[in-house]
Each structure stands twice: as C-alpha cells, then as structure tokens.
Length: 86
Image 1 (cartoon, helix red, strand yellow):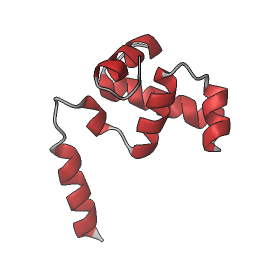
Image 2: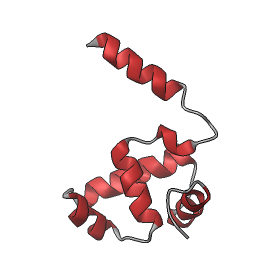
Image 3: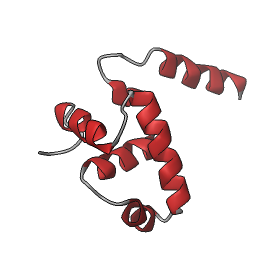
Image 4: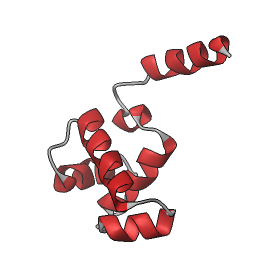
C-alpha cells in the first residue's frame, strides 16, 4: 500500500507547471469546470450529489492550488487552458 501512495505522490510532485490543472483531483477538476461555466454552488452540489459545503471546500482548494483570487480568474484560466468553452 505504501508503494501505491509513493507512486501517487511522485506523480503529483512531477505535475507540470505548464498545466496548473494537473495539481487538481478529478473531483476538483469537475467542480472547477462547472464553476468556470458559471454554475452556482447549489447547482454543482445537486448535480454531483454532494453538499454545498463540500463544493465550497473544493472551490477554496481549487483557488489556492491555481493561485486564483476568485471565480472570474478561475474562469479565465479555465478558458485559456481549454477546460471550459468560451
């Protein structure tokens, strides 16, 4: 089990700085995509069957990992990186 954890940690440590979204988990990426499309926390929570508080926690982690201050900066970055359409 430790080997699997070490392998995952190594992959995350080698995340390319050219793609900041590689630092996000799969769930964070999905929440980021929906936020970038303008979805509200309640809509995201209902669609993903999670609580609004969980969406807000994911949002906080996403903004911190990507160095964004708000959803507008997140949306701009997502559009530039192709995560969200114009």
